[in-house]
Length: 480
Figure 1: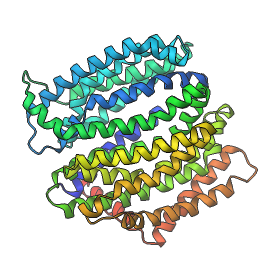
Figure 2 (figure 1 turned 180 degrees about the horizontal axis):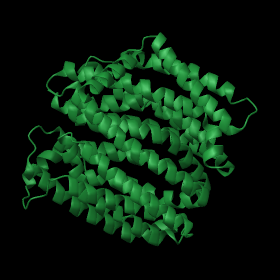
Figure 3 (figure 1 turned 90 degrees about the horizontal axis):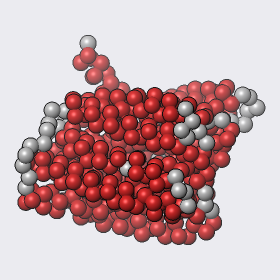
Figure 4 (figure 1 turned 135 degrees about the horizontal axis):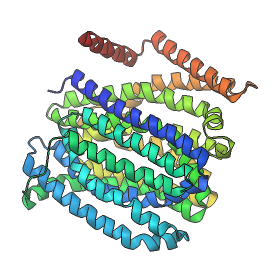
């Protein structure tokens, strides 16, 4: 049985890894945003749309299959490693050949060389992927902390150096590629597993019978999430795409860190308890309550403080990204529900349900894109936000039967955090109207927001606050 302390300890390591890396990346992005033009970011974003989609094939659902399989051995790990590596070489060859056509599609000749260079990250992912699955399976997330942080710090200095030297969009490409190289190198040094000279088509077939549904689900999700960027870059302009992406970056910084930490720890923990549905339900419910307690005040607070943050950190040239930022804050607020429900479904082996849910959600999402496309980038973003709670309901539906934990009960578990965060956000918006320097406004908003939320949670006896405090106290005692 996986103890709460084990899960929480690995969550802390994973969260520390994500937060450490993202804080460094965030600081670097601010420096780069002051040096580079929005068009430089938009140019690189045109390429990364394709790479993000192809990254789904790198895993092929097989990494999750290894984690879910109780008795995975070296034969399975080695088989998946060799399969993935060959697949990544094929994917890179495809991008190399497609590069001129991508450049022609966007009418930007410089994209040919850029695409061929940044696509090397696909090959690097093929080397790293199974090491990541091994770490997740054995819940040794401390390894991620050192590899991710090492890659992020090195690439930060490298990216800034290239930007100051006037390389423009190439600075962003150099940053991404060096990050992947160093991250992979450190992971291979710190994780002792190595592929052996063995391969089994039978084992691959068994793993793929579970994993292909996750592959199809991931592909649908990734294509859908990046389709807007593809359309914006083609129909509108790279500058519009840059503002859209920059608005997404701030809430993504918060949500990705918390969500990735929860996702990577929760799935293997649930998988180890897959025969005890009451335990899976308890873990799902705790995940939703605690992550909502953390995420909702963060995204609501960020939305209320958006304008002074952008003015201070990015300068006024990036102010058009503020409305996008605020809308994405609402969109990402429902991600804890997505993550917890989908991990529960995967953990009990129902990858067929996982795929079915993705199809249902993407049909709704595609309709929202088609309806909003003629009206501009902002209506497309609003339509995306509207689909977020609808998608959360769809993800929660199967667990009403699987775990006896329906969407109404889940909303009831989230609602206290949402309401208190909403009240806090309203107060922060009022502060925003005070005619002061943006820096002083931001400081006032942060301090006021923390006080309102913490005191409110204490007065209202939020059990998530009590849970986090009790875990922290027990960890402190163990350290003494």
